[in-house]
Image 1 (cartoon, rainbow, N blue to C red):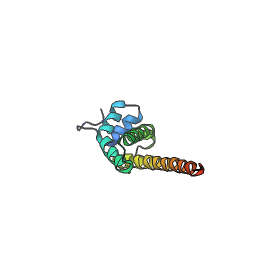
Image 2 (cartoon, rainbow, N blue to C red):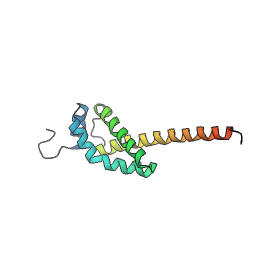
Image 3 (cartoon, rainbow, N blue to C red):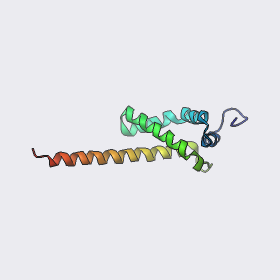
Length: 110
């Protein structure tokens, strides 16, 4: 369906995913899910958080697929860019929450 030479290439999967093809999305996840999970786990050091971030990355890839169909970068790099953006957003949010909790703790008289 995607190519006549065997396995579909990554960009043909992204094209199919942009048309709502869930099988194509699952194939991309199969190819890159462990890679993204490894990146996330290395940064956040929490398996549950890493799993949530992986889900977020592939959900965003699903939404952005129609806008990112290009051969200028590899699909791996495109997914990696989404992953880096998501993990930095997570770290910023987590740091802000921690800062807020620290400020509240300092405000409470001992």
